Length: 134
Image 1 (tube, one colour):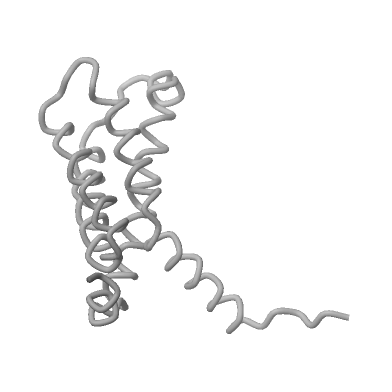
Image 2: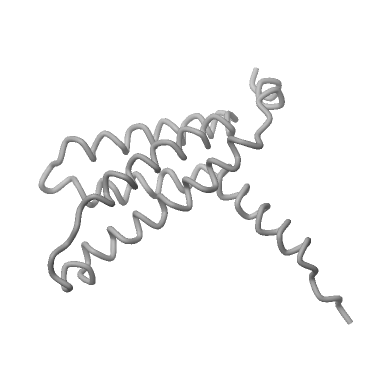
């Protein structure tokens, strides 16, 4: 019979999941795609500054700079979350329409990126990264 997971094991697995999310190159790419889909038509200049920075973060991650990439992703995700939080929709149908659902998903991914990227950046080891690139 398998033993029940203790609170320590559950906490460790949650932190491992958070670290895996923060070190992955996929979340910033998904976030850049969602931001572009929201602000490309009609073109909005300020929000469209975020996808190139997030894609640059993905590029750094693919070149084994996971700690720095996580920090950049966390910072830009937090900035976008602040920017997107300011907008308020007046009608209830605007919140539950297609655009509202995409906006909510984007803000959720921003929040998770901010937490996971901040955790990886705070606990990352840059000396280990420098040796792997060469």
